[in-house]
Image 1: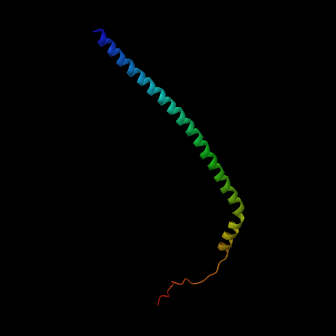
Image 2 (image 1 turned 45 degrees about the horizontal axis):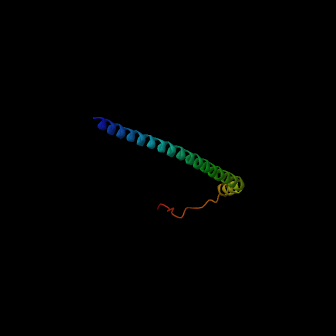
Image 3 (image 1 turned 180 degrees about the vertical axis):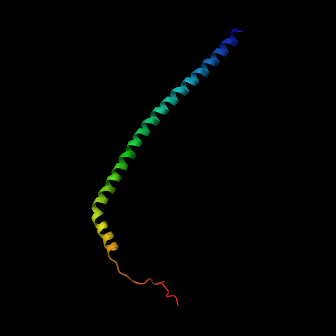
Length: 89
């Protein structure tokens, strides 16, 4: 009877140790995953800022030229008959 009790207690202790080991490993994994996630998030944010700055500077450089082209197209009115127009007879 004493041997069965010791065997049960040994089995219980083994299971508790395995659960504790798994819990510790899971905590380590979670902390490493969070650290990597923070680093990756910072890198993505930095890359996004660089891209936005590039687009803004490009917009500022090309704004006047594009506006001049657009105004030239809008203000250049040349009345002419459309090629598909058919005179009704």
